[in-house]
Image (tube, rainbow, N blue to C red; front, side):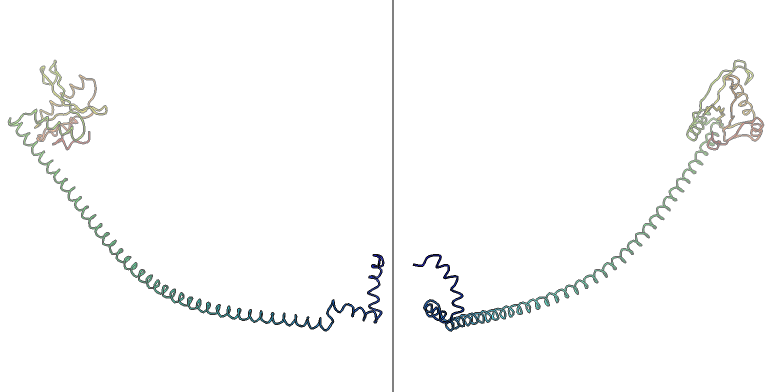
Length: 292
């Protein structure tokens, strides 16, 4: 029985014996032949394995080549289809571009025509507006001229009425009071003033040489005093009488009149000279009076 130590020593020496002793090496080979294949068998088996691996590799390579060829064929077919589709899309895009260009051209032409038409309409509107403005202006001028002529006719008619009224008052066909009221109304309407009819009593007879009632028309505006004589006719003696009545009023009220005014459509020439001498303003109609 070999001990473990001897076994270990034998295993340590065994490689050296096999390498150095040919007889021992041959004996070992014979003893182990049943356990291990010899070199020729090993090489033959290895060659078979390599041959099988080579055939498998070649088969796999063939399959890969076939698969690659099939894939390349399919990719080529697909690329051809894509190329055809791209060509169709390109053709469609070209047609769309042509159609869009044609549409844009037609829209541009239509817009140009619309712009021209709008310009014509704008010019027509401008001419119509100008014509309407001229028509309105002529109508307004005509209306104003009509109103001016109408107002002038009214004034002339009023003056005629007042002269007729003055003649009537002089000849007793209408009252002097009514004529005076008409003149006072014109003054109030034209100048926006109030004509006051003032009645005073002259106890000493300073105006007429005997005690009597004195009547005057007075306008007071912005502190100014205007004394008026509104009559259908004025003689020289009437002018003197008006001047005396005005001085009586000034003396009675303790202030000087700013203006003495006679309004009468019928004034004697001598009365005009007397009025000018006394500083009295004379007007043939109430509308002729200088601004109050």
